[in-house]
Image (cartoon, rainbow, N blue to C red):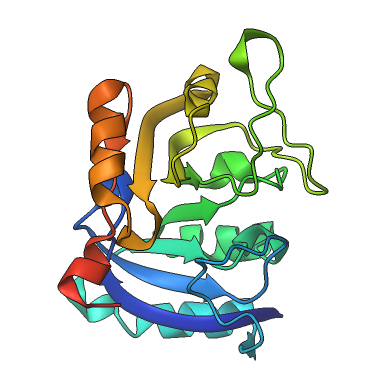
Length: 202
C-alpha cells in the first residue's frame, strides 16, 4: 500500500518536459523539510498499486501515457511492483526526487529528475559536492538536475555530475531576475520556470 496525497492530470510546468501533459502521482511524506514545499505531508489516502493504476486509467481517454511520480519524496514509497505494473500497461514513467535514495530499480524509470535539497556548499576534490546532512545525496546521476536557486555562489560544483540537462529554478518564483542573471553568467545552466504558477493551474 502507498500513502498518496493526490493523483491528477495536468501539464508538466518545470524542466525539460515543460508543457507536456502528464498524470501526477503525488506521494505523501518526505525526508527533507523544505520551507517552500507544496505538499501536505500529513494528508493522504492509502492505495494499492491496482488502485493507482485504475485512477491513472481514468485519464486514459485523452491518449496520455506519461506518469510523473512526485512528492514529498516518492522514493520513500515507490517500488518495483508499481513501476512494473505501469510499464506493463505501456506508461512512460518520470520521477522527481531529491536524490537522497538510490533504489535498485532506478534503471527502470524512463526519465529521472534529481533536485537535491539541504545542500551546504561543502565540496570534495574537483568541485564535487558532498552532503553532510543525515540523508546523503545518493542519486548523483540522471536525466536532468534541477536546483532550486536561492542565491548560492557554489552551485557550479553540481555541473561535474552526470546529467543530460542542468536547470536552475527560482525559489517559489521570488527571485526570477537573479536566477536569469545566474544562467546568463554560466550558460551550462538552463532556466526552469514554474509555469503552473504563472498559468495558475495544478
